[in-house]
Length: 412
Image (tube, rainbow, N blue to C red):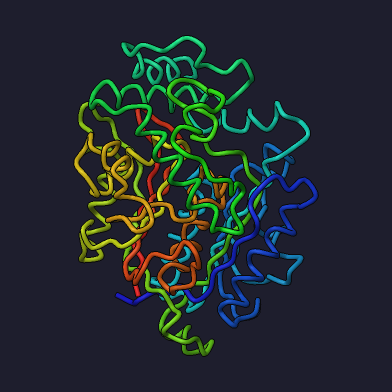
């Protein structure tokens, strides 16, 4: 099987960027990735464009990638539009890899961009309403919120300001984990405080203010046990990766020392399972496939980026990735195992909670971070001598878990 490499990466600033457009964010992310690879648009042989919200936000329901890329001179090559909820960026990456493995070319592009902020706040928050089966909304809601029943909710711990229904779902998942395994709100806060501390060193992160555990617990509530700093924000931004075969690296004259190998990329949809069967979680099954494909195990990973739409998400995902036993994610996080300098640093970028969560770009933002880590170019958030890295990215809801999970393993 042909080896595939990341030759260049790019990422914009994340945040509330009302003066930016999808086109300008695309041009910045792709331009930086091309510059990093020492390539030009004429070197690209295929492009996979990830976006989940432009149709809802702007009415651009079709040919988003062709339009976003045309202004920067990307023409004639195949451009494939990718939507897979919050896993859209990782899916674009997976498809760009498959294009090269199929022998269709030697250089491909994966790019994800979102413009989620708007002066129309109702439109901003309703963008998430399509990330599950819209024909069974009441059934979806009842099934997911039931997971949090039976755990007492202290008075005054629900915001009186509008927020996405999905925060209620994340809170229900959190309370289920607390009831089943004894996870505490303080342990969830420890994850958030760790990520906010990491984010100080990421100049492109949306939020860079450090928090202590007590700061996180004292912050405005969203819905118990979640407080504001525990939750990922709405974000504008973009990220891109240039992928090459070995022939592509030679054609572009790229230094192999800076090229990062794609050891495995696994995309998997969920399945029906009992909530008690934690080891059958879609991300856990995808991770096992990825480890087998790469010929490594969780004990070999040096750094990870995971999908922490809330801090509780990180606790669940480090269990799914095998960094600790199921049910032990809270204690592992509180102990400091996942902080910089710990046993397995997780989300040195600051994670979605701090770096930001531009849905269609999120998976590629993870690739940007892990590429920097494996090159030793991450500055104040650098994991010492990182050689193997893993990214977990999930999207949508179906049944009691995410609809889709992506696991990507990179190495140098």
